[in-house]
Length: 130
Image 1 (cartoon, rainbow, N blue to C red):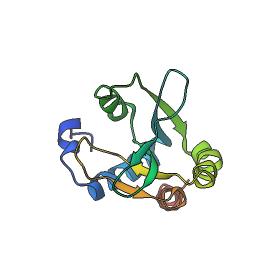
Image 2: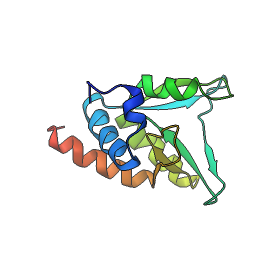
Image 3: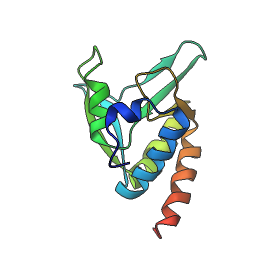
Image 4: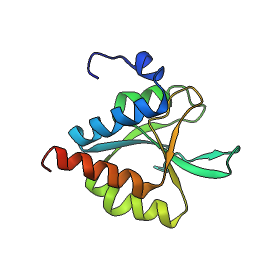
């Protein structure tokens, strides 16, 4: 992953980006979101499928890359994996939000239930002995 740049990763399909996301988050123990000036996180409404999701990235630079193309003024915000598990997953589920993992500027995105991402990350953490 370290030898791939953002443009190369943008060209990967959503499943390949998901694998990179899980691997990086397991190493870094951080998940990145975008927030506005009021510290409100970005939520995207999928018109085609009629649901709302939280886009997440594995590193600040990917998050910033997408903030730069947004018409809104957005900045990257880090969430620790333990905080994501303890606070965000229950809150997202309570609010009926899904998670869009590692979106690209293309059209494909891996949309998941928050608990599924938590489970996959916990499985990956166990590979690291965490």
